[in-house]
Image (tube, rainbow, N blue to C red; front, side, top):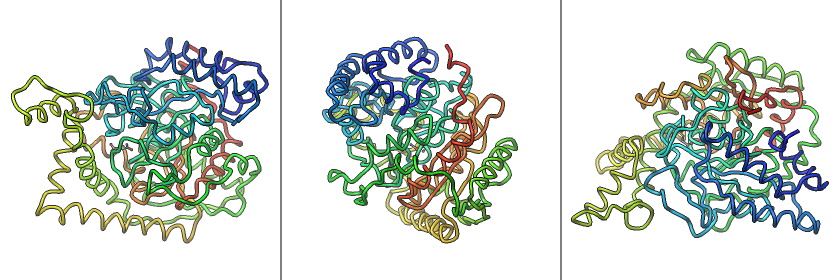
Length: 490
Ligand code: GLN
């Protein structure tokens, strides 16, 4: 077997048994990236020298048998909105093209301390705005299953890299579906963590009250290994949760069935517009989960229809405020060939931001302006509370919820890009989770016309352990997560 075919867990075994060195592993991945990534385009930066140096450190650690963790020597990549010291962190925006942070975000720092090795940074929709990675300021990532289709978004590069065997795991960011949506389009397992479970320190913000960092990998087990490493309280992020983290992977190893679990099926998520083959795959997955001992019950989340407008309104408002700092003075691009300071601001933002980013800044500035604030932003926040309460109520009668991740499988490149509303609707099943701040796991559960189908499992705040248990038990009985795209053997 080639190194790229192995899971995190299997790679770890080879490393500790000294059947492969971290450096050899790293070189194998770098070589594969060089060969295959020009087609997939999942990376914006490959940190070759850094990677080899860190891999040698990991080899030293393995040799001495000191400070070994399940991730020591394991290569990974991160979405380009996670700050990496001395390594470009662009958010796939021209405005940050040359920006190199002088510190690591907490998640990256924690991975470094486990001995995991950063291969590079993944392409994304600019600042996380999009559902297809077509809004990248640099280029569009391709879906490894079919290069004419999008990988989903906004962490499309991170999902495509895992699906194509260009990294065993990646870190994504989910503000409104950006881990789950591309995970489902690319047939990988992705976890949107509880708001605050993973520190946001050093994550370039899109919507500070929604943003979460979460792992993407080939199985729920591998996701658990990564979550263990990155989760936990961080004094540098006052919104990070203080509750201690659980030994997720150990719990999974002891899990055999799902006896006693009540799974809610929200009727608002199985409606017209949901692709028929997708619905059939989901129903089959639910039956499989029932056969493991869980019981499915129908539930209702009555305010679901408001999730998209509420999400986008709050997003426009908070994003417009978060992006105000990119003014050509402090970070990245600076258009200086102009007559006045005002023109520095104007020209930099005009040249640096893409069309979708500008659209959202304008809409957000409008929604926050005096006289409109109450009618839009405040109203949206009130409805957000109603949506959160829907979930609280549902979790009184069931432990977890199962829904689709997206209404269709990966759409074609170019299909939705000229119609922003159409693109926003691709998020119809994922954004409510962010409004409520709860965790959700996306796992592959079928294939339709050669493209993967994803199942979304949602749970109450801090229920990552249960979600991973459901995903893990499901994956121990099915093989959807082991299927690979046609470019796998290239
Ligand atoms: N599709 C969502 C949006 O465009 C994705 C946001 C995210 O999770 N970063 O807002």
